[in-house]
Image (cartoon, rainbow, N blue to C red; front, top):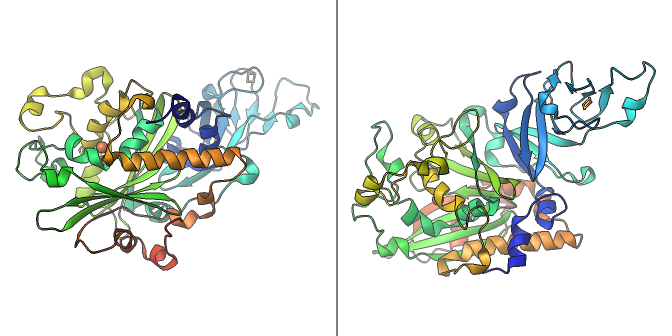
Length: 439
Ligand code: FES
Ligand SMILES: [Fe+2]
């Protein structure tokens, strides 16, 4: 349980808030690269961390992200003309390059140098792994790009999707490290409607024992290891034969997680970025480090059965949403599905989008032993933001290679050290250099 003040500290991410400052020190995903695919194409308006922004790809292929309001008289640059290496405001024709410099003011005197002193706020961008990334912190402190594994792979090895989620970012982020809910919320025994969707995608926990999970699966023990990139939440179920089933979920600061699945050879990465304090945008990437994604893995992305939501392709709003009660099927819920809602992400949305509405009142919650990872996540975020207030930068910014991490889902004998199991599941480069457990 947090105080009201701590909850505000954690959930507010606008400019000049402590958590907002922390987020601004990291590279964050802003858009799918496909949204600004075309040179001189249509500018895209969006919002992150409470700021209204416009992205465009210029004639040379460079992506720029600018503050949406024109510095002249604040018309929205999203209406602008993207032409000849710049975005031209349609109100009076001022034109800006991707780095925010004003290069043309067609109504000012021909010999005027006024434009040289005018800039629109611009942010550094980076294109990698099917995403456009943004850095919104002080220019002189721009960190190296974090080496997420799939961003170093050829395109056929990964797929990235985006969805809007209508709640504070922390409700989504806490859900990603909350392994305890998997055996309940995502316990779905329904036969797939579409025979092309493999049964194990819909029924990851299927054991034929009814709707409640057996207690050996549900009663997990948790270990937390802090690492160079953040922490690993290690959740363990004990099988009746004494073997242990570990689900290890790395949390990479400030807003990234890697979701384990013993049924899926590919890895899954998630990011949750605040749009404002009541909305967030989720990016999900599935990748395989050795080969292109196979048909089965592509289906986990495109079917909506897994952690990639089915969305409206223009708005990125999930097709099953609050407005249609997430298409809940009460008949299905009574007979064969814990929720009656389709898809893993589909099931996450209704619970995360309404925890007291869009901002969870954490001062009134009741945490149990299975909430250890959530407590640890909050502690890390608060510590980093408080340190930053004292002038101490997040140490994770110094370890871009540590972000090249994977989740682990594995059955092991009881006597094996769990952190060693986690290390064994990491890319070779990580094992050689070592991902260190923080003191
Ligand atoms: S408001 Fe943009 S050019 Fe005047
Ligand atoms: Fe979930």
